[in-house]
Amino acid sequence: MNILKQKDREELEARLPRMPWYVEQFVQYKLPDLSPASLVEYMRDYETFLRWLMAEGLTEAKNIREVKLEELERLKMESVDGFRMFLTTYKEERNSKTTVTRKLSSLRSLFHYLSQIAEDDDFYPLLKRNVMAKVAIKRTHKPKDTAAKLEGKLLQEEEIAEFLHYIKRHYGEEIASNKQALYAYELNRTRDACIVSLILHSGLRVSELVNLNLDDLDVKKKLIYVYRKGKNDDDFKTPVYFRQDAIDDLKAYVELRDVRYKAPRREKALFLAIANGKSEGSRMTKRAIQAMVLKYAKRFGKPYLSVHKLRHSFATDYYLQNDIYKTQEQLGHASPETTQIYAHLTDKTMAEAIDRRGGDDASS
Image 1 (cartoon, rainbow, N blue to C red):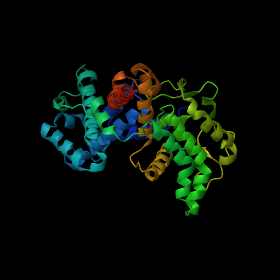
Image 2: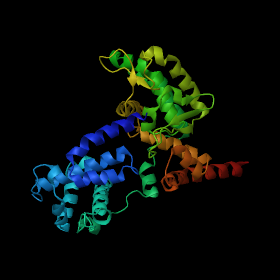
Image 3: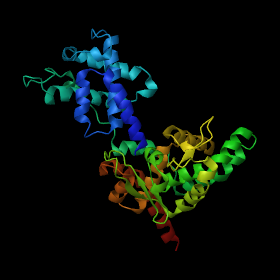
Image 4: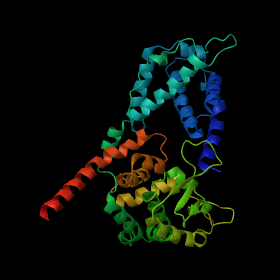
């Protein structure tokens, strides 16, 4: 079972009854094509919008479930502009240009469905007037722009080994005077090094790591079987290769997993943690893995180094030795366009390599 997907389904089921009937209908329409995680994001975006309508007096509803279709039809462009302004000023740290674009795109999807696809009993569109059709959504995720933002924030080839060595040894030396921190470090460093090593030598997403079970690991074949993002089949796991470099770290962790984390037989998760007040280990959470990586990254002098940037670090290195299609398959990208980020990231690296070769030839 995909643990994260199950949690998303539960959240979706909890949120849906609080939504207007037409939003519920839209979700049912989208359910076969979108993951529960994507639909939960839609629900959050719609809740923000509907609450804003209530706060601005653009609906007579007392709760978001009572917002009527007719009230959406009467919205003017100035209201949409007002909502856009609200998104850019309210909780600014959570609403970057990318986030605002995504929230507006969520609304466009809903309004498009209501005005172009859904029908009433007389075969007329549910929404007679679609104000969101007038809203231009600027594309924000150009591979070249994403690559520019990542430049200088990833681990280069030699730094991959340095970061892993830091986790295994130097971090402990730096916190030696803090007995509590040192105890937690000694308890978890083999696990932590294994997680970071696996990301840096396979390019796994954090959600894929969280879902890993012990029997998903095949060390002999250098394979792990993961639930890929965007795949709605809960019974199929994709085989993903990892490099030889990760084997020693994986073996070291698996050898102590049961004893160190007192894993009960029913617990199938590969990566475990013992929560405060608990005596047995349970599946590590996405947040715990993210916090763990940031803890080491800050001390290492790279506070911007998140789990996702470890994945980018692997991908950049992998792309230098393979083509775009192999990189796409290894990372589980739906489109090669996403993988083009690494083509732009490696331009500078390849240019430097050519210059170095040229220097060697000149001196020989």
